[in-house]
Length: 384
Image 1: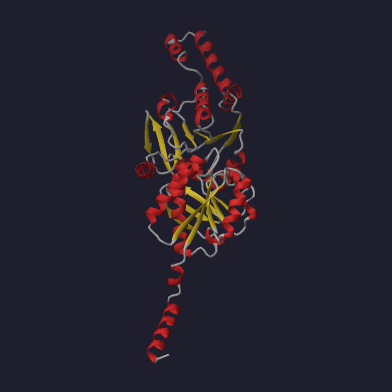
Image 2: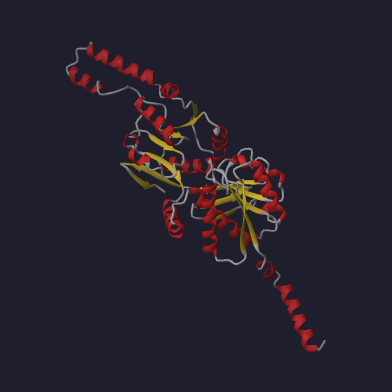
């Protein structure tokens, strides 16, 4: 070998010693996407896949690759697909979508899963909840309460399968709740419970007693006072300034209607709910307004919907937006820390700005910094 080629080899060897990260930069970033591609939920899975494709297009990196596997919304099929990912050497997977699909994923210990679920209790150790969880929502509600100097807040939660989620979220968010009531969603039982929570019967009796007192009095303005009293439903206040309702859809409307029946009006008490995903039907329910709730960034959602419709000629669901952000999040973390040790990737404190809003990452948890909205006079207004 002549002297010239020896010098070239030595120069290249020294170059790689000085810049080893260049070799790392050329490594492929492999992400698994584990969604329903068959079965009843395949349309949802297809939209999540399309959203991931948009993310790939926007990131514009030749080193980023996404591999697809089917869950069929079935825990056994999910496990089979996850094992196939593990055999391919994939260490980080977006999905599954549903909580029930997580059941056996602790058997695939080499992979970290970023699930779409918003549940945080009883997750396998290698699963991180990526959905908009109760802690994120209560953090935003806590901020709203502080901004409006609300002194006494009660929380109403339906007797369903997420009571413990809410209890855990209260502890983690450190929100001040004076009383947490669990209610039955059956209409007759619900009304009776709301009456008890608002002391409705006592307040109703107070009104009846006051009407009798005025009727039996010699007051000069007796007729005028009776006219005023007969326009009332109750006398006496309730022992709270705001009520937070962790419910949705028609069940939420039933609770607010029961509050109206017991003379607790959104006009004089703050009615706050959990994330309603910009439910348009709430805009039409003028009698239950104003109401307030935390949610993702509406402007970013509109921009993403416009992009999705332009690309695929269909409206995306909200999980599609989360899919887009999770691809971006993994890419961001891979550039920052690499994907060699995915088990530690979500341990360190990090923040990532996505379309949903800002992701806060620490101790294998993802929380979202949510915006806050008011629905009033059939209009949606951003509070923060």
